Image (cartoon, rainbow, N blue to C red; front, side, top):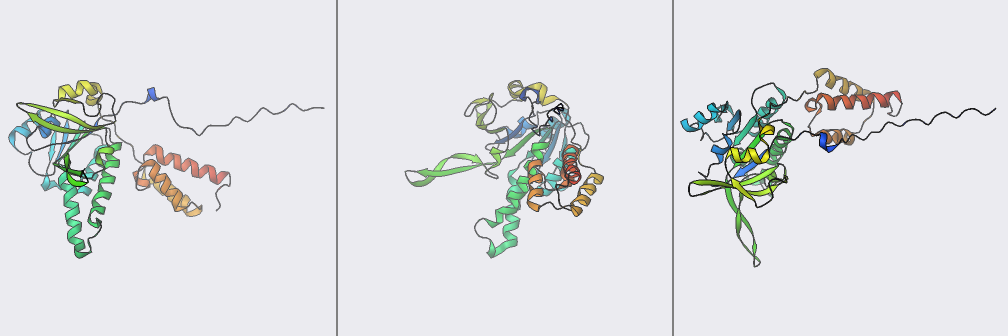
Length: 307
């Protein structure tokens, strides 16, 4: 007697991509640079509910603080540690994970803490400073900061000084233009890189680099909040910021206990961290560490991980 064949086993897909139209538009992450006095700070302070990190102590004048207060903002200055990349990163992490009313974070300038970190490391190394060794801690600090800026549900404006840009002209080194004074790869990590300029009484922004269709490279617009908000989407810029829920201590402990029992290579763990854009399990979101726990528990049950 022929037996009825069992129905085919339904495979559960591991693919996680979603319909792109269901993804919520993110708040803008902007790098803006230019000469002193062209309106960079004034533009940034016109954004809603600004958490203003002043690394140079130059925005404590009355007209700046009045504008900041009017828009529901608060001020953090050099006396609070604003010129330290580590302190700045911890502030961004706190803004990302704690409930608050702020919708914009401004770092003014990003140039000073980056160059200060390089100078401090050069002093520490002394004669051993060679082949750009003094830049390594500053770049590492910038990478960690950018990883949190990428996660945070806030408008982000990084203000930088302007410096000459050099290249080859007729096989000779010559100035080819101007650029921002900071980590050279910073413009690739954000939505927009803008150069601010003043022409008579009016101020303009020229797009140096963009990921956004509405802001094509080399295009320009008036450096005014109303103009920018209309182009980007005022509803996105002004919506309430969402808080990231981090992994709980119990979840971190559970992962670490399982990893003491099963064998997972350091290379694989590093892949988890890179995929989550974190430096360790405590920086993972609740959802991310839950995925790790599910993966580990499934492998234990199926005996796919040696004990």
